[in-house]
Image (spheres, rainbow, N blue to C red):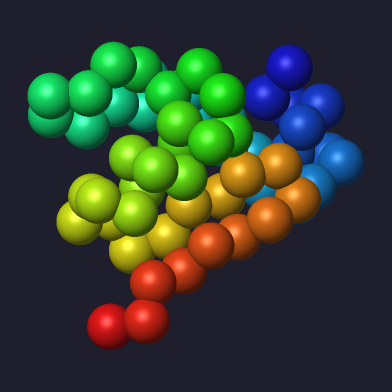
Length: 56
């Protein structure tokens, strides 16, 4: 699977991570992910075809 993804995208890496912030449940919906991202120290969030970045 990683080789196929690498052949399609040029990026031979996949990351699977549970996206949750302290005191909040796991993000199961896009709205959950955006809310958790907004209140976290993360610099960016890739969500489907979108990349959200914080202005610092």
